[in-house]
Length: 336
Image (cartoon, rainbow, N blue to C red; front, side):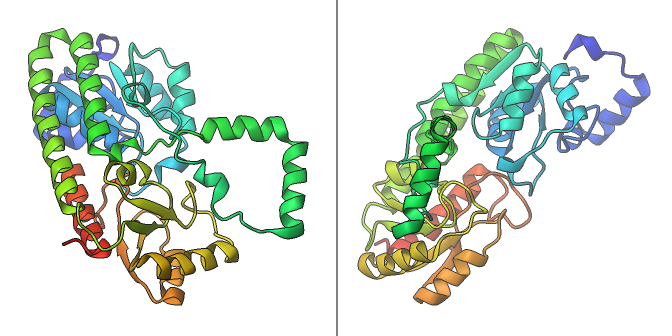
């Protein structure tokens, strides 16, 4: 749709039509994908944003994602090509604070419509878990840590502020629906010719999300325990929505190693709260989760934070994987 790059040859247009635009948009490396189609060109930062753009945009959009399937989105680094492509798109849809490289690129880009999902719902502070978890060392080591923190107080304070709000908001279907409404409004404004279809598609999506919310409410209303263990703290919004307690092995950083004290604390809590299962996820190593489970005599299962869809995902889209997550939680929590 972007007229600045409408110099694509007739042969290429014919080839693109033969392949299907969905094929082109599946790979963020495609030079054709981001900004030279006759559709409303949207660059999405990672899968949950891609899903919204595709569901709401329907046939009117060409969606490119910056985060490849199977790539851990927190660690994304953008190529110069991807950054250039962003500037050729009609809109960029991202979630500020989740991917610093994307935040920087969006800030420097002249793309006309910038949609920050973090502004479309209320992000919350779930206890700065990345600072609390895995750092219960005690004694002299803790005192040394405090001294080090004082020495770098300004730096530590700014880092804490930056990470205080939990970005994993898409795992709450209610908040995700709020974001969907905001995305639809932005699409309608940016591409008014197709506004009616964007509204219709958004209404259909929010109905799906409302049904998903009802399924979670009903499925988790009566359980043996309300506590679940996860590899990293992605499920704070989901836990809050459905009256559960998330205990994360690694805090917000899925790659960090928990301290022995943290492992012991979780083993004790598993006994006290009737925890049966340690959840891990598809995009990061399951080593720590499986070690904890073995030491504490617990089972393991997948609880997918839906940061990307791969062949390992238990479902081929957001709704299907969330339904799989619900089944896993029902089994682990002893739903009746």
